[in-house]
Image (cartoon, rainbow, N blue to C red; front, side, top):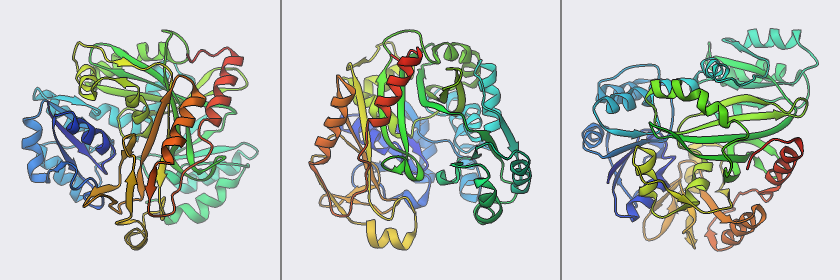
Length: 443
């Protein structure tokens, strides 16, 4: 197949390089200039001038991120494809589909439900999901006023438009956010930035994912994820550090019916690809409460799922984009840890240049889904953000998949102080046991 990846910061580059090794003609366009060196020497790159022609002559185009269209650079990419809109990649994906090109991973409407939390909540309600108490605001002052009037409850601050991950903040004690919204966040958020304040629910957080092929839902799986940098749930929220993924064996259980109710929306959107819904199962009533959508690739749990695929990845992507031959999966679990080096998670150019760029990476890299790297007489860090990659391991049991990951980690050499969590699988094991005790089916 002729496959083109259109990416913001190269989130799915490791998938692209694996498809290239299988013999597919793979090219990549990376939109964010700061990440353009990622995978140099490993895969063919395109400029903005080249990308439309390549897309129109590809058998499959894969998008791995949703992003608002914010500045001249974003508008220039839209102009290249003759589209417009508030989202960057969604209108492009729709235009390619309208032109008869197979597209996985984006549409204008699914881009909106991730970036606009109010819109996403509306879709979740129509799909029958319960919602934590949530309130939307367009100024920090409004949020502060609300918090002062609702003392005694813990809230989560969630900005729209995929802003910096560490801006999402869950209060550890009531009224903690008042200080952040009055002192810290005015320095980092643009005037008029939209956000929600969501009541914190005590329970078990879990994600459920299924892939829409244009005809049916397939590849149902669950993920337990650790989002903070340090073991034990300490440090800044970085989106993902640990993951454990397993395929569902039963055609029932947590959120399965929800995907059926989502079908009319997803058909109308034109979207093809994975849809992940993150929820928290309440300790109080054992019901799932919707937290957020992730309708795209570009997150670590995808690597876990793909590591369970038996046979070529090209066959998997052919199926989920409308092909007829179903993929086969290994039984059991896949787990992963993210391997990073300083100054991650802080993207300070001077520090990245002095601490991360050109750090050597060697050893057994077969199961390392590499990200911020390039090839020049060996694998080196490209110095974009310090995320060397995501290391996966599989086994018939959860504990076995964890041991497998850490055993593989010992065979990787990184010429810098490596940052990774040491508690992979611990929260997953406890969460699965708790859900089983509550009678919530996740197998």
